[in-house]
Every structure is written in C-alpha cells, then in structure tokens.
Length: 168
Ligand code: FES
Image (cartoon, rainbow, N blue to C red):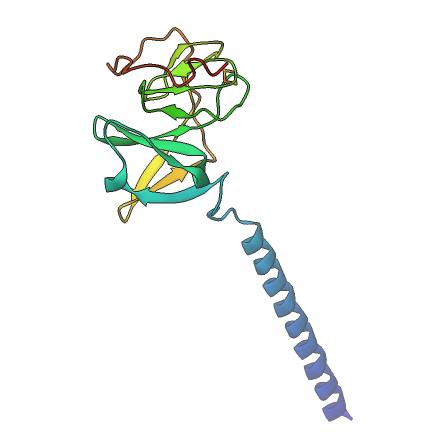
C-alpha cells in the first residue's frame, strides 16, 4: 500500500516538474521574441555599400535606406532622401551639385544643408557605422537638420545650371 502511495507521489511530482519546465521554456521564448532585434530593412539598420565606394565630391543613392551617401571631410554621411518640406523624394542634380526638390523648389547643398525654398530645415541625417568595410545606415534614428538660414558648413558653390530650370 505505501509503495503505491510513493509511486503516485513520485508521478505527481514528475508531472509538476514537467509542467514547470514547460512554463519556464514558454516564458523564455516569449521574452526572447519580444526583444528588439536587428532590423534588416528600412526603419532599422540597413547594410549598404563598401565605405570605399562612397564618393568624396559626389553622392550615391542607396534606395534600400532611402538615402544618399557622400563623404564630408573623409567621413561617410547618410542623408535622408525625403524633403523636410512636404516629404517629396529629393533628387541629386549633378549639373548644379545640389539636391533640388521638384515639388516646391527647395535646394540643399551636398551635405543636405538648406539653401533656398519653402523647406523649414536641412535634410535629415542618419547615423552610420562602418562594419567590415560596409556602411550600415541606421534609418530608425534620423537626426533633423538645422533650420533654413543656418550657415552652411561646407564651401561648395553651385557648379552649374539647375536640373529644375525649365521643368515647370
Ligand atoms: Fe520639397 Fe516641398 S516637398 S520643397
């Protein structure tokens, strides 16, 4: 009789221990899933191109990050392609060496600093990191540009005619 009770008690404790382990595993899995991980697309960290492929006096578009890359004083800078005015995509005009927004005419220098137009401020910048030679753009943490009227920090006069001339 007492052997039967011991067996039952043993099985009961075994079941309880099993249920406890399943509960711990479930809680761990839930906690792990809810942790913020590395985001692969726009809105998180985007792997782009090798740092050595980023031009010094020009810009390169990286569509996956919805940004442009350029180098300012040898450092890679990522500029959001979204116009701070009303959100149009701002193309780079190689002829003039400026960003020229086709929507309402805002103009920015190669660093995204505001030159003219209705934009309230410079284009936003994204933090960048170079990992194994690749430029990683953190599109989840844009940094708003300075207000229009703030002095430009690069000395790059307009190179030539605007891409927007005659387009309206
Ligand atoms: Fe670019 Fe208006 S959206 S100037």
